[in-house]
Length: 384
Ligand SMILES: Cc1ncc(COP(=O)(O)O)c(C=O)c1O
Image (tube, rainbow, N blue to C red; front, side, top):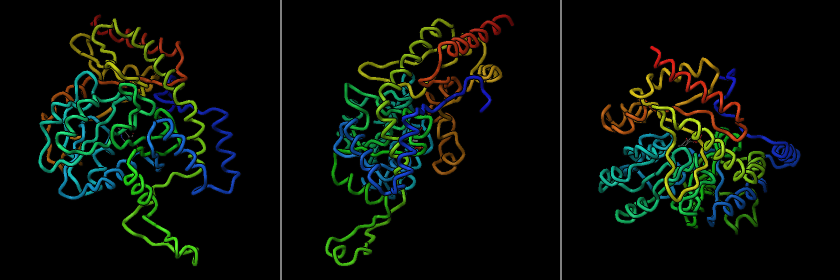
């Protein structure tokens, strides 16, 4: 709701961001110029991978990564069921089957136990999603993937700047980032692929732009000449987007740190309210809190998530739910044949989870108001 007193999300746009955009508009390169390359180099340096390939969304990043790994019809790709549609769709774009896996009740990340159970001879890849920004258990995932010869494509849509045992997410497999306005940093729409594998990097860069190549000999003679060597797409990030990306990347760590501080403040205030479970932080991770997700336990709190959602919305607090488990959405039910009951942890969480506002500019008074309204809902329920 746009007229919320406390919006669910606000992009962090500074004067430097605006200047960067204006400057790139005044250059003659709106797309295909030097800014996208500069952004790629800076992002690769930040994540500490050899390569970074800019694209126009994380959805495109996921698609190109699976395609570069040669995922094809008949293959299976493991996907956690508590994620956004794009994670599963990337497999479908390649003609492969997304195989859903339940999540861990504490971190909401992929359950490594269920992951291992769902592996078949057809399984070629796994897409761990670093839910809310908190890294998955990459040690276990790497071990399972190695034992079964599986590729790892990390869905880092929530996790720019997040680390696991000191290493950035997006370095454990092929990393796919999102720069959508609600994310840890933004290029309006946009995404990035990170990898240390030169072949994967080259394939993604080619397919991002129609798989067009210029043969050196022909180019010397005829500058207009190009060849198309495979099926490709227009998934390019333009130079104006790259310009704001460069500016935002400079502040990524600071923005994440501000969200961490806000999250710690919210947790300190919410943790003693009976029936509210605050986010769990696993060891050895830096959690940038793209999302701040609480659980509402009706038996202790008195009202359920839906009623709390209603009450807080009426007070002008922007809220969301991440996510409806994919198997409950009609397209996946119809195409993949899953049923209610197939993923008990995700289904139980789905009834309880509520994403509260979380961004660097969130003020203490706003967080106090949110806490006060949650507390008031609890009291009311007890008065009944
Ligand atoms: C987990 C996850 N994966 C993928 C995406 C797709 O990102 P994009 O909008 O950049 O395509 C999103 C977007 O919200 C997401 O939350």
